[in-house]
Length: 112
Length: 114
Image 1 (spheres, rainbow over the protein chains, first blue to last red):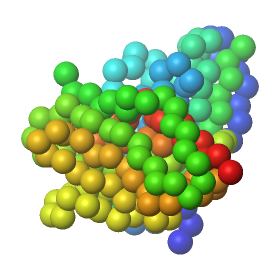
Image 2: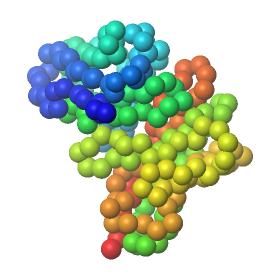
Image 3: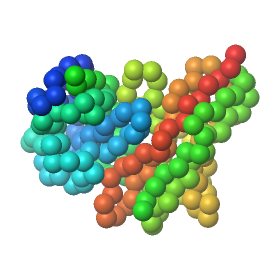
Image 4: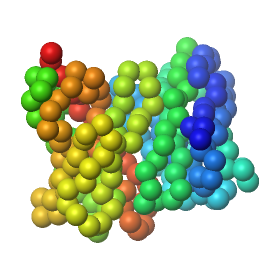
């Protein structure tokens, strides 16, 4: 069974631009979560989608948004990029909340 | 406020010795508990979880974890450490109700010394 895939793996953007990251969950998983990982802040929860509905949202500004499609694939968008948005963005999928999450390799975003 | 604490940023252990990576949490109710491991430049890998039942749960790669309800702890253990166990370990907690996203501790870097 294929794992969680994320595209692109690496991205370099300029301040003020916007970016869209994509995540394809494991087949059959309906829940997709996004996390931001930085050396200073660790792993921070962004949002979670289940069957196309946002179920939980972390404490991030409105520049961060996401969505989930009917095939469970998910995208997250960051508008008006700031230097502090440079991070590893991880996507994870699972059957539901009591089940373990399976993580993708991440997208390394660098904002210059 | 709900929180997960990993009190040790770094744990060093000699190869062949037992290892323990500590985790305590402050979350209402009886949350789901997880351990994940991250190798350099990789995503997180699931090790084990506690949902209900026996307080000692066994997971991948010979790891196990002990749930202690009174101390709200979920320490990760392994009887005999391998050099290949060197990695970053994360404890994670998920409330069963309410705003029940999974949230992580700050991570503990384990180094197994040959």
